[in-house]
Image 1: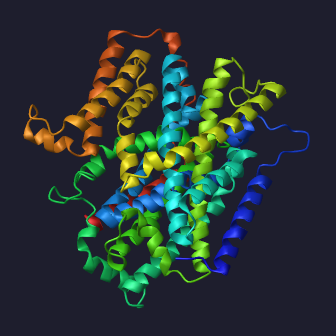
Image 2 (image 1 turned 135 degrees about the horizontal axis):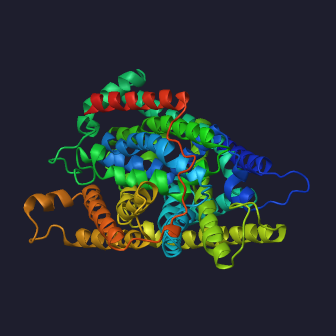
Image 3 (image 1 turned 90 degrees about the vertical axis):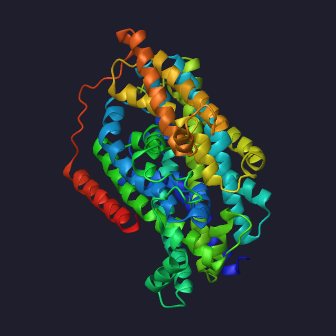
Amino acid sequence: MTLATIDLIVLIVYAIGIFGLAQWVSREKAGHEKNSSDYFLASKSLPWWAIGASLIAANISAEQIVGMSGSGYALGLAIASYEWMAALTLLIVGKYFLPIFLANKIYTMPQFLEQRYGKVLPVLMAVFWLALYVFVNLTSIIWLGSIAVHKVAGVNQDYALIALGLFALLYQAYGGLKAVALTDIVQVTLLVLGGLVVSYLTLNQIGGGAGVIAGFQALTAKVPDHFDMILTPDNPFYNDLPGIAVLVGGMWIANLSYWGFNQYIIQRALAAKNIGEAQKGVVFAAYLKLLMPVIIVLPGIAAVVLAPGLPSKDEAYPTMMALLPSGLLGLVFAALVAAIVASTASKINSIATIFTLDLYAKARSIATRAEDDTGSVGQEKHLVLVGRIVATMAILIAIVAARPLIGQSDQAFKFIQEFSGFFTPGITVIFLLGLFWKKATEAGAIVAAFTSVGLSTLLKKAVPAPWLPGWLNDFLAAFMNRMLFVFLVSLALAVLVSLAAPARKEKNIVSMEGVSFRTPTVFNVAGAGVILILVALYATWW
């Protein structure tokens, strides 16, 4: 596949336009020096539409578009549960987590851990998150993005890797989170429109030109095994999505950790004007999540019919883009690049935020305006500079590490989920207890963290084990079930340790004063709509 001149023009216009828009929206008033609140939290002024769009733009990147489409090619519509159950998770985050975070002026997840537990755990978790973001998430985003660019445009993959990383770095270098969040509505609009075009053309071709409905009916008839939402034990991919566990089991552990306690995601909501805007933003994102499988998973399933026998499942989406005529190909390719750049820039900014505010500023005892509006002009300017340096170092490391770390994986999305699953049970325990159980202690939280990693590693290597009953071996063979099992064990140990060695009261300075879990009518009505749509989807494809 090659890009025609019109496609290149569309791509260049997009790149120049989005870069210029990012700089324009992040400009400051005359005489105002950009400070840590501006750079890391968008001046705490994001409206609901920017929050919702930015949540999706940060989440939907090459690892979703390319990786999840590849999983759709391999196992079918069941992979859409990651998207649809995330919509329900966002409602929980908006109703129960954000009121506590915003009432306590939380700006990073390590900061919450420090206020809730003490000074040791937040440092451990900050270092962990930095390693995870750089060596797993950031590398996977630009690696899968480079696959798409290479497949569609014929650009050398290494050159594509470097270009994507550096463009994303420059895109957010001046404006920080404000540059990212306030332009993400454009990125998401382009992503949705481009994805819908790909889905339309693939279904229309499968239907012999008779339209989308005819194409969808033909697709379900040709590959009916790819339209089972709840996989049965005899399905070869059952261990990836173990039946009912996607609704009531381990997927909740992953979703709560990702959408509720992940700096890379939650940072947008923490930068809201107020709690009302934050809640409207997450429910807007929930509706966008309901739409995502149509523009991501469906083309992957269509590729089973239109391009069987691909050497790599992650080539499914780029291959479907070959159906696009000139001009439209440029538009959809720009949409793909938009998703990659938006997600990469978001990740870079979150890495800079955690390092600068939770490690560097704390180590040097620097007060920041992101925290309490007390930072001096000189200190604030220095912190922004540190953030930009860290962002640069992060993307350079990711560019170098991408091929050896991610390049050997056949299904990158699956790799990311399984690797993250070693840590997410412990993270979920730590935050849920920290939010809703006053007796939780730092010692108990640290035990949960180490139990999560240690037990997950043991089960991954040991199962099936002759010393375990057969039914338990079968249950633990699925990584999602292992996450649930590890979560329950980590939770039990954290509770026992917390009760055995209670912390001093002054360790917990997270306040519930003024926190209300009552939500406005618009949130309640919109949330009910999300739930009804989910019920209809699963009832149809059960």
